[in-house]
Image (tube, rainbow, N blue to C red; front, side):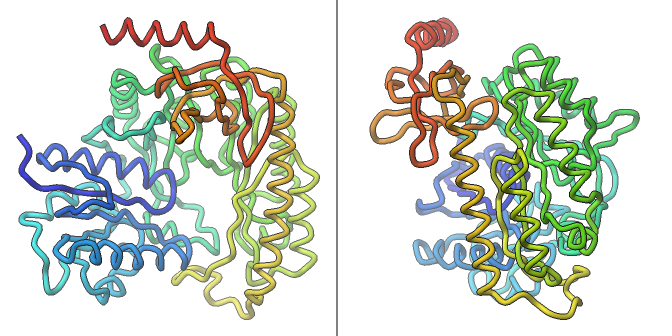
Length: 448
């Protein structure tokens, strides 16, 4: 029986936040809430916040105002990273009723007795634990085809520009057996792809188990069809990961390795754990060992000490390396970080210009990589259907594919798609009828 209350959820930021929102929403289901869309008239709205950039903070504030315009009586809780680092700022925003930091965000439902508007928000802000952890719930009810599996939280790297260690605390790992338990539940619920996520997942260490042990354990789950690694620090990996990709088709040939700058001087100022040569050596090893691997990266433009020459080095690495594309961020001051006190700043107009240059390089290289697969088959997991009845999804190596003749397909199918063109950020392809028919027959057998 439902309790007559509706709850909606909105996630800002990283894939880890998405994983946690799935788990938080399950805790509300357990308390008999009906889960609704953020645009509906709801009793409770949970905003899982991000504070990596100033823009993320601003978007959170904007969403609070949007929700209240639709329904002034909605109980609003802001949880997570922004709550952890700027609770006092959030308290000054009219309409917020509950502020919960990173340590207690997973238990937010326990702090909502009666979801009634308050004149002053409740603030739950406790010190973050450094101990290994388990997770009670399993996020199996969200309308997604890829399940995010949290294995780790926090970070000890203390990069000079990064607020995450303050927002998430120091590195801690999830119990190995608890990861396995949730993974089995996710595959039993029908998920074919699991994405391993966390803050700094390559530093996983629980008892005598490390990140590579987690990957091998997950690959051994019979019902799992695809395993994907989310963003991971390059200094935490060895060549063994490429050997696994080459040997086991379940492990997706795809990595997102944050570089941040092509200049060794800037990398040193950022307190990164590698130089550009070491980074490129690792990327080249992957390309040599794993056919068709897609390796993407993150880049920051406008770091306080970034000169025009430093930026040109970033552009050269993006242009000349096997990196396929980049997520590009303008440097943003974050309170409490080491760079907050560096003198001098890059002009915002210069940041914008540099960002545009990198985006152009990234977009061109991404399209060129996609075009390499014209005439070839890619295995695609169907995720979304557009207004023209065309399904889209991602290939094993994370190419976004639109299926031109997929109207008879169903969601969450793995099908072979022959690529014929590249348009508007998609590889366009057609599924072979035998492959689609076989998959549909399998689904019908399961349903009966």
